[in-house]
Length: 118
Image 1 (cartoon, helix red, strand yellow):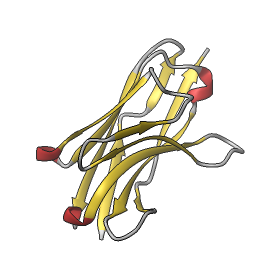
Image 2 (cartoon, rainbow, N blue to C red):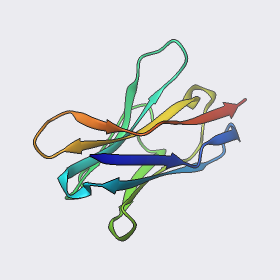
Image 3 (cartoon, rainbow, N blue to C red):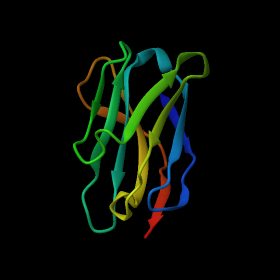
C-alpha cells in the first residue's frame, strides 16, 4: 500500500501562486508515476499534471504554462506549483500515484482545498 498526504492548499487571490506538496509513504517502490488531479463542485475529477519516475511530465491544457510538477526523490514528495491562479482553478486538489503494474492511478490522497478569489 501507498499513503499520500497533500498539503499547501488554501485561499489565494486571483493572479497569485501556490505550491502543493504530496508526501508519499509505504510501498513507494511500487510507484512509477505520480500526479495531481482536481475536482471542482459539481464537476468531474480532472487531470492537472503528472510526472513519471523518468521525469516525463504531462499537463492539462487549462494549466499548461502556469503549472509545474516536480519531485524530490529524497523526500518522496511531489510538488505542484501553479502561478497566475484563476477563480476557475478553485477545486479540491488530489495527489495520486500509479502502480507500475497498472495504467491507472490506484492510490489517492485525501485532497486539499484550493480557493481562488476574484
